[in-house]
Every structure is written in C-alpha cells, then in structure tokens.
Length: 75
View 1 (tube, rainbow, N blue to C red):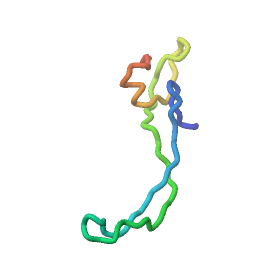
View 2 (view 1 turned 90 degrees about the vertical axis):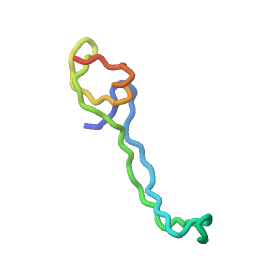
View 3 (view 1 turned 120 degrees about the horizontal axis):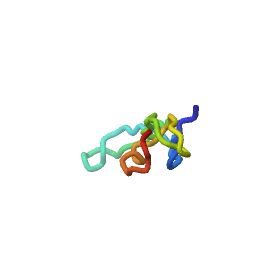
View 4 (view 1 turned 45 degrees about the horizontal axis):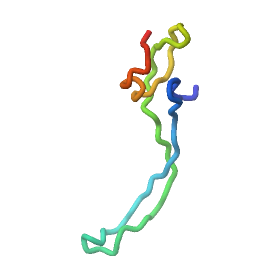
C-alpha cells in the first residue's frame, strides 16, 4: 500500500545526499568540495491509526502534523 496521509496528502519526497570533503576556508583550508551526490528519499512521519472517515471507522495513515492540529477524529 502506498503510504500517504489521508487528510493532507503528504507523502515521500526525493532528494540528495551531498558528501563534502576538505577544510573550510574560515578554518584555513581551501574550501569544501562536493565529492559525491547520491539520491535518497525523505519519508513523512505517518502513523497508522483508526479514524472516522465518512461516519465509518477505518484504519488509515495520518501524518503527525494533522494529529497535532486536531484534524483527525479518532474512532
């Protein structure tokens, strides 16, 4: 099942891991250089919980931001 918040639609986002080498210029070096870049995925903080959807209790993934804001009615 694709993990996605049923309230706001938040899901995974792709990004990069950037590895830098070298000593910073302010510390007396020649500056930081990027040595490699690789892809990675940032996942939303989703919790599986029983909530009320269309007057029926169902298990669904909800992000913690929606839980904190009170957008979810627990079953």
